[in-house]
Length: 237
Image (cartoon, rainbow, N blue to C red; front, side, top):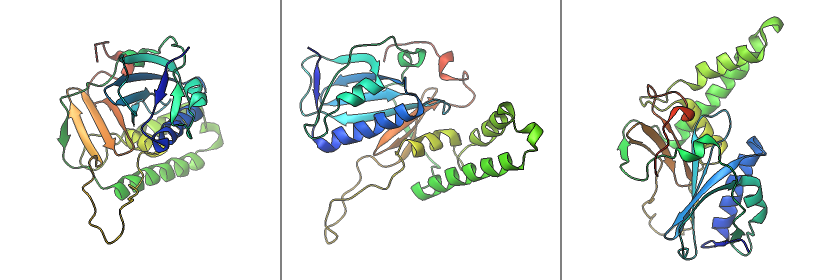
């Protein structure tokens, strides 16, 4: 019998299902790496074309009896999520893609300055998308090729956000995965707003950058390091 995950509540199950659904939307054969320890489950995925790792942490109802660390099919895990019961069955392991062995470090993160606000980040993504569409439509028919569109995309999405070194493609990934959403407050209007325990922030650890939000994170190698996630050396995480 497969191991079952029991989430803290139905909202945690729904958020996990939404995250998995977005990954499967981009890649029907998507795989995710699961790591569970203590009272939380970390789910890592890599949506195609964005060149980032996406991370969603889900609260568990109770710590697992034994640590969990394996790579599974995102689609199979999605199918097993029971939002009403706040649980899911862990699918059988699959052969992990290269990125699954190269995860960001767990600790040592420090916050970097210069990150714009949420609305500014969303506006930057919208502006980049509009520019890509305009430049694509302006291409003469004989130049409207996949290679030319890829060149335009690389130029636009490699630009950095504001005064940071975070490429726009990382912000685009966060937006596409539903991470750049306003935080919904359940506090009555007359009550003082509590301090957000996980605000949007740009973090760095060694050669990694991480855009953290209350709904998930995207992580990538810092510009100027080895290109692409596949160029990294596998190390324990």
